[in-house]
Image 1 (cartoon, one colour):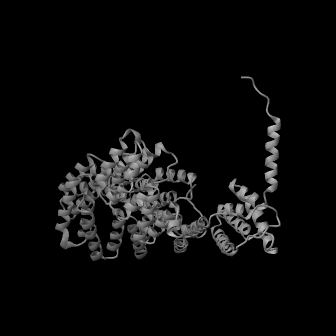
Image 2 (cartoon, one colour):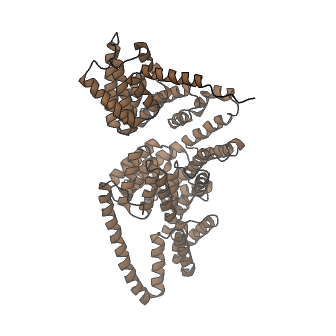
Image 3 (spheres, one colour):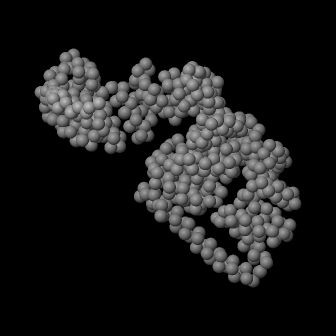
Length: 590
């Protein structure tokens, strides 16, 4: 086909028409177009000037125009993250809207323009303004005010995002029935809202009931048959049935269409963690990280596990990498806090945990970090408050209960600890973890030692590789001086997995039976796994002292001097951490 020359007359006519339309636009239309184009800094300046003009001459703009100006000005301020100021301006806009509603006839504007009918079509939604106010209040931690604003919107006018925000706020405030109602309303409008499904399951709504609300969309859309299995997996997770949750998620992950899905891998890693399977949890977290190098979700748990395993250098690298991705999430702060905690710098860990909670008050891992830091600093009652809040947010996570029980035992509250352990046992059933928790409390009372032994035997019968149960059983055998039996238990466990604590305990048992050479080997292996394990270092130093009394005395004096210097450094670093916390700066990224 021949190439035709451009129709210059047509282009000229279009340009002329566009110019004519612009000439018909008033100043408010220009502000609206800039706001729609994302020119927030420009909108903030021009709207501020126009509002001052309106204040000095009330006749300059009609009530509807002033309402629009206030909303656009508030939007620009919200974009600049000045949330208290934005909330104030949004409220001024709502007051202006009330004046507008009372005005039966819109006055003509001296700035030229459009008809009142056209202005009414372009008015910002009052419901959207209220949602923005609630967003500001939520960010400012004024949850009650946010709920009050959203409840002021009639139920029939609430959009899915309004119901979702209300549900999350109700859940945070402990108003579970209202939260369930709002989540269900979200699902009624948007049946594929998966976060709302998780919210319902976390509030103990039955999986079958939740699945029924999505059944129509599953049957009407192809390739969505996996959704019912996904719901079942999360129902098992929030019901505390970790093993069935693992099996169900694995069956999903093996499906060709969902293989290598990062969210599924993170969920699987988290369930492995809840089940006490550290090895598989770390493996799945690493697999998810390889697929998505910018992954943040779940990395706080991964960092905690790595720190607990003694890989502090890797934890430091992980924290630095996540800070480069985003310092506005709780996860990097928790990871750095775990590094500090396992480096015995508790004040620094406390500050970092508090910073993480400030960014996300629903971060269970941040609450646990702050709780253990407070406990190790001797502030047990404050630690109890944080563990209780973690329990409220994650009622099926046993580490929350373990932290609280440790606090009770630290304050000689054996009766409270026993009550809590029995409650967990009855609620979540007799699995290896609950049996071990109950046995741990029983070990504190001389009258319940036999019961502890029975419970630990049951736990190990279910899961012979459960390290916490092995450790407690070894402690019991050590008390009873059954060293050969303890050595056999530890050797059997170490045949399938390597763990610093188990190697160190085996070293202690070997010392008790005078097998010093192998004991030294076990301490060395423990220190290779965790160079910061003080008990393994002490065991090795004690053996060296017994082998060479004269030399060891000299070396011990030197070690003592070095140790005291390190202790002084730690104390100094703690006091510095408090000062740094006051200055609100992060101090671990050298």
